[in-house]
Image 1 (cartoon, rainbow, N blue to C red):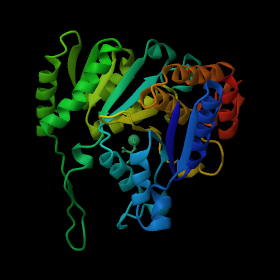
Image 2 (image 1 turned 45 degrees about the vertical axis):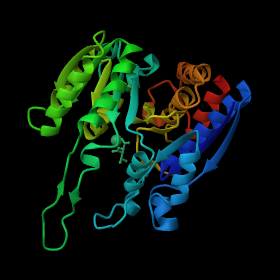
Image 3 (image 1 turned 30 degrees about the horizontal axis):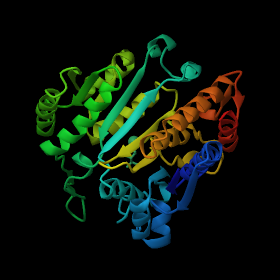
Length: 354
Ligand code: IPM
Ligand code: MG
């Protein structure tokens, strides 16, 4: 098949990991006889430096035309002055919103080879296989806000959710549950937040159309705890924008590292945006030690969801598993006796396994 893939590496290690993702995509194209074309654009801090804007119109246009977008990460100390008018993260939020990518899927897959890289006891990780379905274009990230400016030392952010917004993400979660273990845990803060009470009510209503799927509700604080105590009980975690952000960083520790979790951001069509859940990691930028596997696994999701290439997606995931099985580790997942490799070497080994 032919596909037009836009890459937006962004800042920091985003550039390093996206390079490895592209390497894997090229290897897939060659092995399976596909024709992928790549176009590279700016987003985030590097875009601010070049154009003054975190999401230049040319980047957005290219992403709109693309069959799929592969992203790295945005942000860094250079652009994090609290009084700055534009921030790299605005570019990321804007692209999600503009492309209508309201459904963010973050699979938490445990490679048994990495059980020792997790801070949890290995027996706790037995049977862990969950997907966080995070609402991505609403909630407190997008509500009205006011910065504390001048004399007025007060600021606010607003969390807003409408029933249709909740309904469409809930449907995504229930549909996905049907392809898995038929269980949805909806996470909210309904004991305090009005948004969460609407969330719960709406999810219950949607659940009526999925009698074959078991639904339970959990408050977000309890969910944070149970993710550590009994992570294997979860199948689908359905939650709002900010709770999903927080819980997926936490959940990454089940997989051993932030460098292991991939994500797919989807809207109504087939096109989507794929990115590792980790950030731009300024502390290790340029050292060549970042773990590219989250990005490579995101490439797997891209092949599956946007290009409909399930076999190729499986092959990428298998290549990652084989790489880990052969003992290759970047620094973040290194344990004694393993073969320590850098970012580029890790990508090359995965390509070799493929
Ligand atoms: C993520 C990131 C982003 C988010 C930041 C960079 C705005 O943490 O994708 O998880 O909060 O959504
Ligand atoms: Mg995050």
